[in-house]
Image (cartoon, rainbow, N blue to C red; front, side):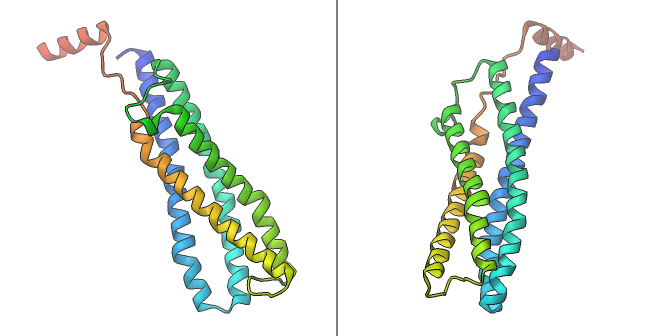
Length: 193
């Protein structure tokens, strides 16, 4: 194996790892918090205690999401580097795994993540600090309910795009299994030995 192909293989493994790990944590985190923790907390505690607790948990999770997004971005960049080296920038065995489709999902995931983290959540926290909650009959209470619903929708959207990106990742690379003449000679000599 030549140094160039070893380097490309290493970058390929890095690109996969740096995408699998953050996408898995995004999917798992959203499932754990949204489908497991939140319902239990809201059934176990009074609304005045459960709301601030979950707000704190989601605030911390959003910090983790931003770090995971950085990792995912590095992995996506490495994927582009590998594809350029292999000359497979516009190829994929599965239509959903084509670079332009995966990049679109990545952009949509990024928009949902950043809009939720830097627009919706701070406004929800501000309303909550002002004593407004979901069941308030005031105009601000209704606004809180709309923002909460939007936040849930954004998290479901992030979950969906992360699942699609994770599911198409194994199909996103065209693996070049052809060996160079030098590699074929080396393999032949190993077989004879």
